[in-house]
Length: 453
Image (tube, rainbow, N blue to C red; front, side, top):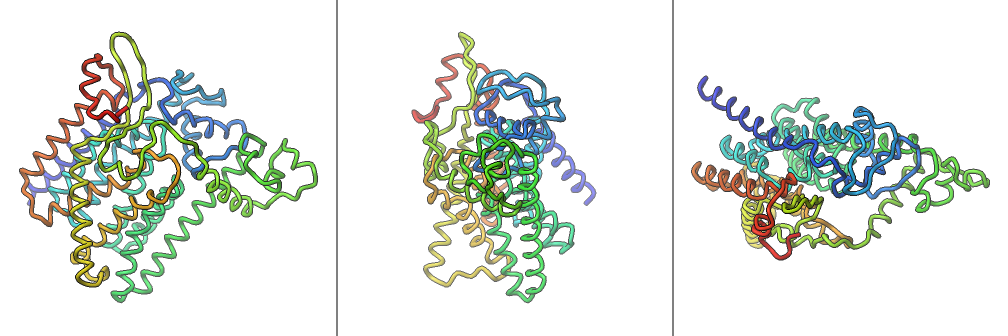
């Protein structure tokens, strides 16, 4: 037993070490603005107090602003796309996000085990996330999807631990990280699906009061955190700015320097202003223009369209950052999810859907519904979308694959071979993940599809 415990500890240490190495590699490179880091003009607005509007909640922008301040930023403006940063504050921002990214494989391994994977396949799931080029390329930059994945995984781990211990601390941890996720992107509302499937089963199994208390606790924490972030957002942006053009006069009457503030218009109160801002955000989100690297939701499980993030052409070599997936990971999990969904559809046509039995009996149904809840709503969104929108679905698919591999009794050799293949393809795409120079021939050899950037 002592030997097993020591071996497990060493395996976790190895996973953590490699995860931190891949996450923090090239932390300060490139030292220029990459892709949507150019939206740093939003968090920079907190230093001028000028009101802006974004299609996502402001909580993460507030965090980015705080990190920039810690890194020495004092309102000197934001460089444009591909221009050099004029300070080291971006290293502090990226460093914090890399820390979250480094923790994700550890959270993945634990969550997969709590979902029903064996210890071996749980660790395999963790290693799969280590070698996920898509996650690393996104998470090492000042962008929202890396923190979103961290919060989703942390919420999943706390939920699993709450089911084991029923402690208040694990319930509050679940609620807090769900609140953080929803406050990063509204699409994280899908993270609530597995939570309330589980609470529904608990209620029908005779734990109605406890389930209701848990649900109310989660809703309360999400509500308080969400409103508090918007309140801070509005209090820190008291001046008129670019976002005022989208708002109604009674909202703009709150903004110093706007004509509506002095023409007798009655300003909205704080809570009414928060509600109006959310309504406007939803409207603006539906009016986002087209983009050359946008892709349709049904192409994401195949990985046939990436996203161009950054370039630095120093002849004769080419340095590029492209958001591209590890195809070994993507295609393997796609096959497992396709099998899971088809199996469940076949079963549901032959007998009623049963979600309320023991976790062991209904786990495949829960996983099928959860994956669908993460993925299928994008079919209803009529605006430009990108490969990184698939990251929550892919992350859950990795955990579900580990559970299915355990249930199917796949051998350890299979797991080892899969991890080696993942590592090999990760190294193949590594220059695009970190922006490392390539000769033109090496660059072309990695363009596996005509639709890749």
